[in-house]
Length: 532
Ligand code: BCO
Image 1 (cartoon, rainbow, N blue to C red):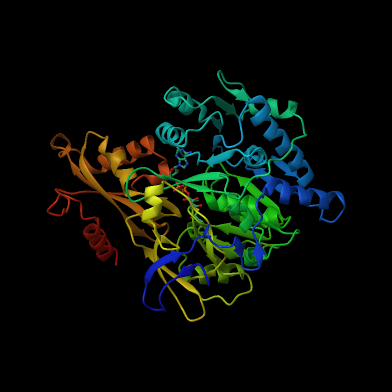
Image 2: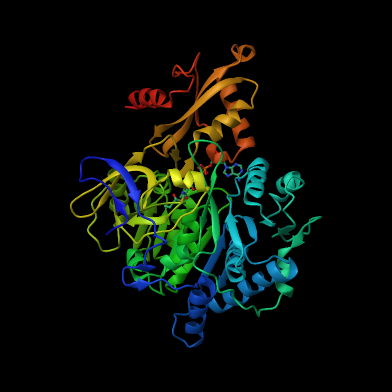
């Protein structure tokens, strides 16, 4: 049986996904799950051996470029040595022990992949974070994860320093920079000096490997822990058949390294098959750079959120030639059939949807070669294991099934159709945003007596964050446009900027239940009506 269930089309139901049950024989389909698995030694080192024996195309495993024309190309053998050196820096120099937690907040620079795989080799648990995190977000992540180590760059080091004294478990600060910084270990210098010999840890299938932070309907983001099973899934033939990459493919994932999509699609999926992971480090997102990059480099596969495709389609895509591009994939939010059509008309390529969550990784996809039903997120792909705060986890389980919090349906061919969230979580350009994270930030501004935050439809970003704000008496006479800008900047300062309310409406009062609870559903209903 497949892991995601729903009712027959067209009656939408809550989407459920069945996690791998700990009481069952550990087997997915025909594939028995090993007791131990480490992606670095079991997969990456295999490809390094293939290279040595001349059984892999002479293609980089990581091909990195930036806006300034810099380029880094590492094959699997080079990546093997460098990631063993990274593992030695983390364990030998920093003294970290198997199971210790490492918060990694880096932009798309090559060292990010070295630290990530270095952690896997050493059995350290890595917690990726977007570089949009503010000092407060970083404090929350360091404290709640009880991290022993943080790895970041020069831009974010001062933010870490401003909160480090409140994180008693934090003992190592590693800086990835060309310059030294007081109180920080210099990753690049240590890497050069480290030995290339390292005995990769044989990680157990139940051992933590990585933790993501995922927004919920209440409170700050929650931790979602994955075991090496997340990496193993990318190795199963059933998952390989989704993108059908080969070792001669060059695959580009445009997602920010803070999200699970990036780990899956810029490391685990391409490297599993010996393909090249292509990265373009853009300091600021620029659709034209993406179009030029697709024309210039031999990229064969691209994966990006639908908002990225929407932003590309604002330009004359058909005037660009993408000589090698053969496969395009989207994930993270809803792709509309008309966007699919526009992209197909401009490039001749279909967009294959994938569906997943930080809690699960990918659970559904439109495999390459399968007949596409526009608007469907495809068919189920093998199951998952997920853990979280035990009480919260329990409330999202029903029997053997994990409640995804999304509504959808499944038709007679097994295609799933995504319809939206069952809760208040906002999906803005593929970012999952909990309304209370924004409301709490707004509450700290003296102009805000109270606020309610919802998602509002947007032609470019799918949804944007909208805040309904009741002003305190002293701010009621202020210029609303100026106040809007001030509140937006305030939220950007307090929490990661992608969460800021792009729409603000000042209201005399918020709709509430008799017990005083804000009726977000009423605001959502009215907003939908106004957007029609
Ligand atoms: O719009 P504004 O200019 O006022 O503000 C923007 C940015 O300029 C600003 N910002 C960005 N980085 C910053 C920063 N400000 C300060 N410091 C920084 N380091 O913040 C505002 C928000 O940015 P944004 O990222 O929402 O918008 P932007 O730059 O237009 O980027 C558009 C997208 C489409 C590239 C971006 O939204 C994006 O990457 N979306 C995809 C997210 C994604 O990958 N989701 C997948 C998650 S994993 C998953 O869903 C499970 C598996 C399928």
